Length: 343
Image 1 (cartoon, rainbow, N blue to C red):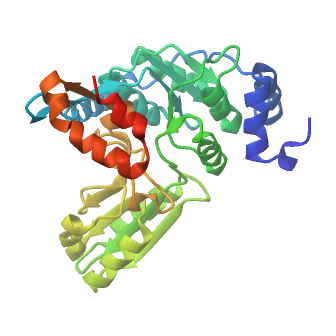
Image 2: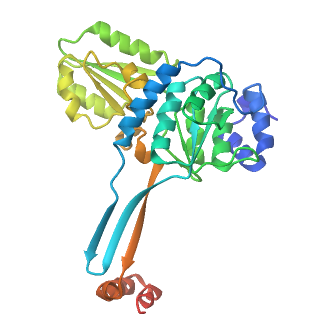
Image 3: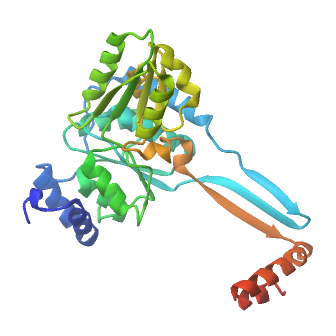
């Protein structure tokens, strides 16, 4: 096996896809130093905090369920759109981040997902497994990195594939998620962490410093920016251009809250630290990074649901729409479509 630094993420993913458990074991030994195995729960876990966060996440996400709809477009032509839960979801949890487990697993449970499988780096896996047990989850694997994403995407002899992969990670994990997204659904590329603090007139600079320091704690690749909010329009334009994971509005910049479009989450005022959203409020902290907030939002209940459309036509309804199909099929050169309407 080549040295890890000589192999690309794509090569690791392809190796696990082709060789399954054999490749997963080799990469785990090479990159993690241990064989992949079920994680054994730690003896001590902050049970009160985990359950308090889980309760808030559950209540907030339960309100997000989309409504099923039905419409009789015309007499005898009925359309229905209903939301159904995914059958299985794989969750990637970065090292020891039990809060991220809660943010991903609880909405999946609320949605009604039948199988929830968790992968997490071996260092810290015991903490994640202990938190998972509090949530009623028992399939937690101590394996991380691109090889873990590949196992979730394609399945191995011991880890069955998932229908969707969610959860944040480092640059390698995100690259692996994007690679496998041609074969399995993913939530979004989430990570490394980002914050933009907009310092408006009257803002407390010490509060801004606290926010920047907290975000930098995630690692050396975190993006921590301070934007001058003296000119609110210019500050808004800067936020929209960056489309960051987190935006903190301080002082007069709080007035921009209702106008921001491109951000994963907005925290308004000196009493709204990003850390409160990371650990306590119930709002999801799995959010788009690297500019993805221009087009996608963070994790929500709909992440674990899919819409299914049902169409019912009566004989009279079929007759009503037949000419529309025949005329369009003729233009598009689809005579079999027109013939299928004659019954």
